[in-house]
Image (cartoon, rainbow, N blue to C red; front, side, top):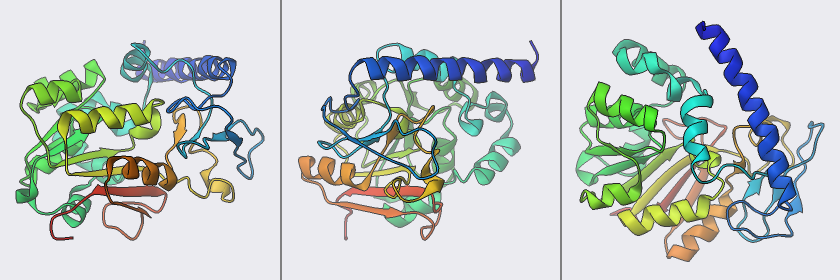
Length: 283
């Protein structure tokens, strides 16, 4: 099968999976996929023909119904079906020039953002959650940071381990068993894919006890009023991660939180929400 036909097949398989996931979620009554609360309010986005999005009144997340992304299904889906440019491009794993070009073109160079919000390399070790095959881990290491990755997909985790020689674990628990105790947990456009988000974040903190988090997600706080946000919750993104969700999760842990829309921060774009959680030394 040609590369073009393969991508075409993946697109239709992704659409079919989305429909099945949507129906499974609707059959469960439209409960929040993260905290399980019922009684969510409808969330209307201007310019959308369909209005099948909700706001959880308990945890603050925006979401569309989802019922299949749990258990072993996400590993299969994100390894074999999901196609997202840099994150899933096997050629880029082998070609250093291609990697650098794609990182720049897709706005995935987070080194300056990390330096501004976290500090220089001696500030501590960094865990990159949902690191794919490790392009952010590789960039951080080249800048002098001590960094490792955590990645669900067996396929991309193996690419990073065997082709780039990076340290990437299959879970936070595996990293903890290996003695890793990072000062910072970093993620970039990962969390909006994870329906059971709160439990995953709790697990990260329980196992790794980081003093700080930096999480980058699509900015959806103005979903009700801005037509440009309409595509940010849908087939590939079951969740819209809001500032309110981060406020509540941070409060539960006793952490300080600062969220801001990107664009005025080096290494971020205007359509991104950059959230810093914890206590930065000297802040």
